[in-house]
Image 1 (spheres, rainbow, N blue to C red):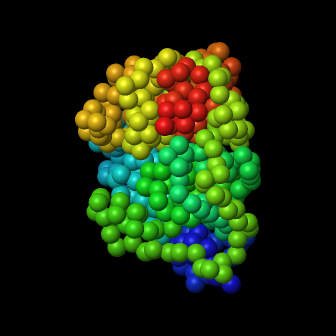
Image 2: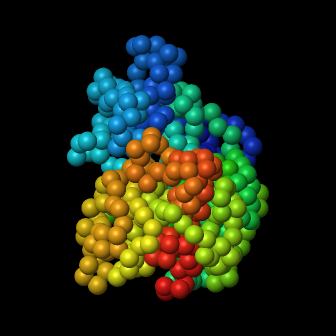
Length: 431
């Protein structure tokens, strides 16, 4: 029996010829990533368990991005960043990207890709559930708790059970009114938020092959919303081109065998999928945009690791060009690189930034911002009574701020269309 791509990567990390789903192995970790929410407790546990003389197993393999609660006056949030800053200084860490400096990158999941830490065939572990985003690069990436991360920090190893794999194949050519966000919300409606618990979600098919890296990252990012351990897309020429452009070479490409064993397989024809939303208060509460059209909104939000990449803003700008928004609409680039691209990328000679400003949007600094609620001075945060449509990944009660707000998840095309009308609107009206 052959192996899936996830099993092959984990076998390699375990220095084994083969592994099977369900067995538990020691993995050698290639990259450990943490941020300002989970970094301080991870470091505290590491010092407690390994002693004050503890050594970081490999400084080159530790990457730290402050990104969650950073543009705030909240003293507790500021304290978390200063703890990381001190840790990076004490241990002379090369991959600490401090806020307030030219090194600041923005949201960790996009920054990992931009800075070349996403290497096919490797194992990346992060103290954030959306670490699975990196799986778009043909690698194994998953989130863990602070205790597991502290153990990796001291040893470079983690004890993991090999997950079963589920395969999701999207056939056909993606219509212009659909994005990766519609596809992953469609899957969530089918399998629910625990349908892939502790499993690998593997994506393939013509529609996936035609996607750029940023759209692929939207799919793998939301694997965790189905309970997935990791999301993964095999390397192809699109991956190679992206990596080549940022100087990443010399990696190992691994592919699922034709006779690999899967827990289940799902096949979709993209021409039969409609613009999709997740209604409050769960990412699997799927409906078509058409069915909820006309729902009055108080805010629109385009940002986060899921929906704040350059392609998300290209989609949104296509709709917002020459339009005015009817409700407060927030544009939050996921990374500082994306923020700069808004000044460069154009439609009909007008930059994306100008399109958003002319439409009346609020452009915020690169960070996780309102996606994780955050302190009360977080830009775009929901308050009591808000009805928000957002490109983020979760819509649980309180996720974007107030427990009494309602959040709909949707593609950047749907969010932008809704911003123009002030109510949930099918993007096909504008395309």
